[in-house]
Image (cartoon, rainbow, N blue to C red; front, side, top):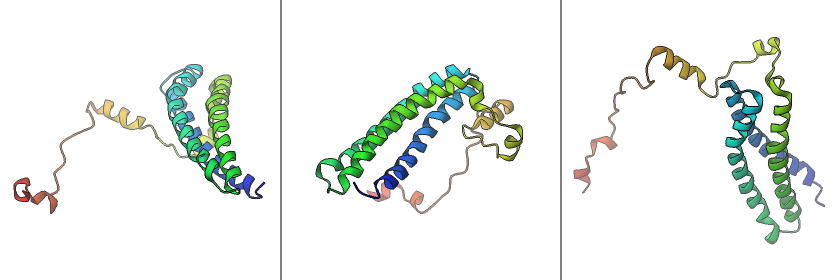
Length: 162
């Protein structure tokens, strides 16, 4: 066994796992913020995010598995460990265990102590404040058409180029 295998595999899998986690949990949280009860939010979020996580995991599995048949003796165990690790992490942990735990803990999964809530910045990743501001103003958010910048490429008419 390659001595660097555990360190390398854990580093790569951790990075991929965090991507899958963000895809899955952000979609579940979005459904929860829009008013769905925790079990319904988990179902709705999992339904939409599982496609993205599945596609990403299958792509990464194919990339890592492609190194197994023709790779060197040092590369084969690393590629195999990464391919198996991606499948276990994406399908078992991120798409099964995480939604199950969020469904079991209910609203407590989104609880944050008030002192910590005051310290953390209030990020609006989904753009909810923009939607609320548009609805409050009664506009569609597009406003007047901005002026068009005239550059060198816009001065050339199609007739001159032929």
